[in-house]
Amino acid sequence: MDYKRRQRELLTVLEANACAGMLVTHMPNVRYLSGFTGSSGVLAMAAGKLPRLAFFTDGRYTQQAREQVKGAKVFTPQAPALSSAMDWLKQQLPKNARVAFEADRTTVSAQTSLRKLNGGRLRFVSSSNWIERIRTIKEPEEIKILRSAILLGSGVFEAVLPDIKPGVTESRIAAEIEYLSRRLGAQGMAFDTLVSAGKRSALPHGVASSAQIPAKGFVIIDMGVIVAGYRSDMTRTVHMGQPDKKSLKIYDAVLRAQLAAIETVKAGVETWEVDQAARKSLEKDGLAEYFTHSSGHGVGLEIHELPGLRKAAKGQKKPRKPSPDALRPGMVITIEPGAYVPGVGGVRIEDMVLVTETGCQILTPTRKDLIVL
Ligand code: ZN
Ligand code: ZN
Image 1 (cartoon, helix red, strand yellow):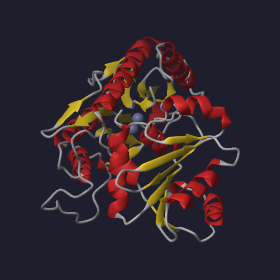
Image 2 (cartoon, helix red, strand yellow):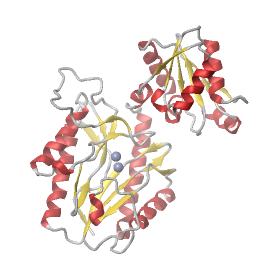
Image 3 (cartoon, protein in one colour):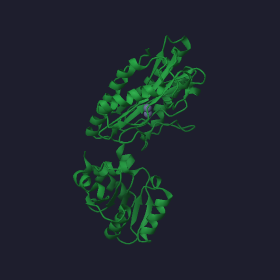
Image 4 (cartoon, protein in one colour):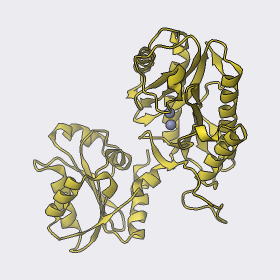
């Protein structure tokens, strides 16, 4: 991982926002910038010709921090990490220097204690998604890890297909998926495995329940694993018994929408254009009203990262030059349209793709024709 580059990129953002320093407290951001994988610590950065970084954590992590942290001095003070980090910044920076903190990741009470610790010495500036935006472009090494997470996840999905039988509960299927994932080397699950069967498949966020798999109907499985800190995310919808015409129509429409969205993905394309492609396709099939979420999201150290593939605003036009939020090469995003017809059932198909200059590479290898069990 190129921590030096990441730290330099953040320095550029600080300079663009006239900030002399930053406090990083959101742990995935701390990890991204320093390599520290523990669950508690604060990273402080002071701007200069080169960025100066200091990492503060407690005694539990002394050894781990020494081994993992790159490009930052490690401190394990007796005092709380946040107050030590503030002391360090006050030492490094002149009075009234502007210091960014992750306002939308900081609780109100933590903000109050930050102000107390500061004692009016530095000026706080709310940063918003500064590091998250750097994280959208994955390094080759990150892509390699993401690929192995995706392969592991797909292998687990295929291996549990024989377990999906009428009468088995949704949570049993989720348990099989999670057990096998751990056995095959996953650090954990990227999120709670979703299994929703029959009429419950019409719930877009169907957490696996004690409901049984019916003899007939869709089963949506949305699952992801963690490998070396990075997450995978895939959804497949299978059908129990022979599907009737109506169900086939829904499945084909969602698959068409998913392929249409993937077809649109390319560097320079606005994220809402991808969503629009899926929506327009579903509209042609008369199912647009049943597509009730966004078309996808970035994935990496967290399951929902930037960019979000949201719906276009009313009357939104394609800008002449790509906006700062447009897709860029190296982004890894999900494409996951769905249709959820109350009383009938739902279908969602989700792949992870890597954005390239000319299009995208589909990273999820699992087949997408309807699997009938
Ligand atoms: Zn998913
Ligand atoms: Zn997803």
